[in-house]
Length: 374
Image (cartoon, rainbow, N blue to C red; front, side, top):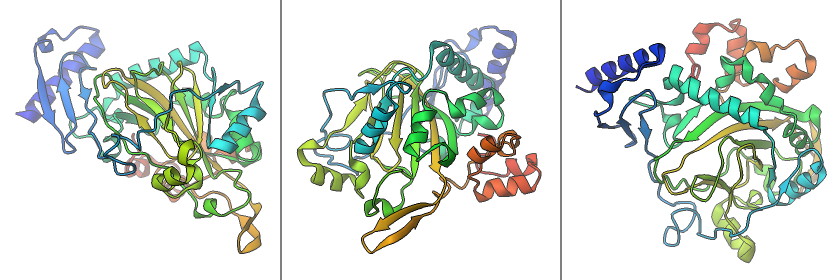
């Protein structure tokens, strides 16, 4: 029954998208399908009729008796926003102190429109790449929708990888343009009516020496989250705990920061960018469960060898940051770019990239990878 319905629905969707006809036969059809992770897909009408429902998480990082997320110490004021061109140093200083910074107007209206059109078009043409399928893969679960590696098949996105407004601040944070390395580029969406997910506060990739090295800066990895839709108190918002990057757990940060501990949901119009140290505790702070949000996430690693010190030695040398994941790969046009500076930017290869390059960037090797088509 389920498989037959899915085939029929898929055919109707393809007919509607190719011939630009409304699929009226599905207008009164409403079917709820439980998936393996208890996410619900509700089929209504048209290609975009699938509603992704977030699975609510148990608050394990904070205090569940006080809040669904963290410790319930939600900031009432918004952090400052900096102009990345005229306030680069001030933006760097704020980041060095707090582990994050908000950049104003990083994307213009044309770029925001272009990326939203990309979402609409690729969700219609390649829904499975976003996780719009009967059985989403594990990396789609809990994220709503995510397109993990859009650069592989869409060279029109290449100019965004070193964006003129956010990239100079990223370069400053990582110790100079020559030390900036690309790690990952993905698109995410918490769709409308996705519900409340109560994602746990967490950090991304970290290095153990961050807790004891001096100086702390430059950081190991930076992530840039660009808002592609307006983020308000009704939508999901990227949320950070300022100063938490110097602690091993959210509990440690809560106890050590005391009265200065805050959970800051960052609001802003489409085009706003948040840069954060991947060691900073963060989450997707829930809105009303009705309004949605679209974001572009790009991760950067640090290259180069840096003189540093530890409590036991003043001759410590920090090596280049390890690769962020074992699955993310770069297309041949970027990995082997004719411009040596561009090649350096895309030189942070993992073993998957090495295997793919050794094969001559064959489709067979790419298709064997966990996210080779997604």
